[in-house]
Length: 514
Image (cartoon, rainbow, N blue to C red; front, top):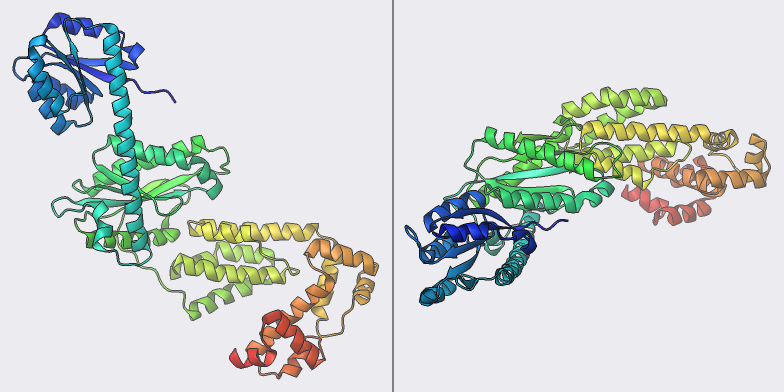
């Protein structure tokens, strides 16, 4: 990355000296001339307009002299470095200027190019040192602010010392912005540093941006001045969000689809209670956007309270019944997910975390019914990571299609064996009998079965029998020995040992405790 040249402002009432410094080879010092003034008052105006890194100033000038200028610079622009141009007779002023914070002085009568280059080297070193110190202090403050937000997000009550890094004041209102990046975890890791660098630069350039911090991956909190109208704030942030999304898509090389970003903006607050409430409301709104946000758009929302419902037993039963009825075929189930199930979700507006939990339970059970297939961790992660209802349903449909494709690619003999096992679970089953049913040798069916299901024939049969036994013990009035016979294990003792190994408790205890 190219080093930004230092901006130099010349302040002197002597025109020939200003002309001489104007043509000085500043590039050789890693600097550039950005302006000049004939007195301190003009210099202050230029400092407000062009923000120099270093001011090279005379001491004796009309209107406002160098000493008065240094005092004002220390108040208004404390990061600006100062080099004095002086005469021998000004030495007592030089001492005062150095005491006020000037970094170096150069005698006009003997000023050489090399001397000025050395002074600029000293300026650059001082700037680097100061910026490093400021950066370290800023990072520490950001960590303390993140710790505060972490406590609030987890429902903990912060102490008064936890609140100090926010520097809240009744005289100054602020707004909380919650920025969410809709991007896969792997792609985020690639652009994380770029995102945080952009936030830092945005904060340094805009005095309305007071701080930014992060508590969770792909989520950022920004605190901004609260004096502007909501509409103005939303419009300005909309431009920022779009720019950030474009930056992420340009920088990432592993994205399969365009990343998006969205932001939630709170009402103006002035107290710690107000900020805590704004954070809580933003969490509710973020959950509500699961149902309301278009996943392909980067946008900004002005936060208002939105209500969601709990996943009650009745709702879970209704959802399960809806999906069960549609499970007669893959096509009808996909159609249900994209229509009736979607409508049910929008009407009920259950909290997304609770909805996803129930959907995963259903998804696991659906996979078990598909020739004993297992739902892998990647699919679970994708569903839990879905930021909108549309994305969650798309994840479910993709999972079903993948399972159907895998089923179509599996050998007919293995599918036939699995179905025969399910149909004759209550009967004595052995490997030779299965092999005879599908027309393969026992050795061959055993090898293929393990390759396609990930388990041996006996392991698969035992799993199906134990799952059916659990279901019967939980939802029927049958005695333990009756359950054992129904699942194909007529030996009560063998059934009890197998059940205990599978569940950790005896079938009698399991039935008693539900």
